[in-house]
Image 1 (cartoon, one colour):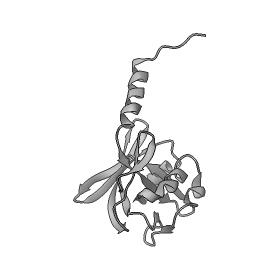
Image 2 (cartoon, helix red, strand yellow):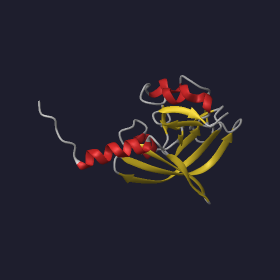
Image 3 (cartoon, one colour):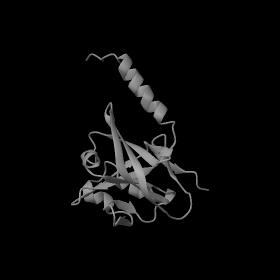
Image 4 (tube, helix red, strand yellow):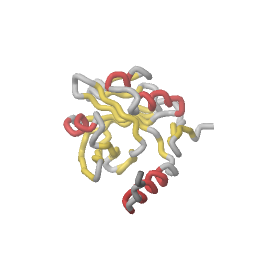
Length: 169
């Protein structure tokens, strides 16, 4: 049995994965609706873009089931999870599908945009899709923040080295 040699690209890709395991990031849930169905995915590749205008970005793999919905719909929500929302993150990962992802948590619908949001999350940012940039395997969605719902205290759910943690004491 012959073992194939790793190419420089394979080594770089592996090293990139290992480097990103060292980058702590807040866990968010990205949600959208096509009017008939709700979609959700857990993500850590999300951040603010600007305060003027208030805007956010999220990077989404083009193979994700939510991707075509984000491409077509005008609105999406970025929900910043708190330390007690670990189960919601797991439900919104590859473990559950479509509506199953909303079985855990107090999900509600924004009356103006029809976008799902988690009622007890520390923050929900309803965004109007402003731009989409393709790069590699992902799309970079930039949304102009239209409304924000804040709840409770700052207790982020953080993902690092393949596991969940928090900065909450």
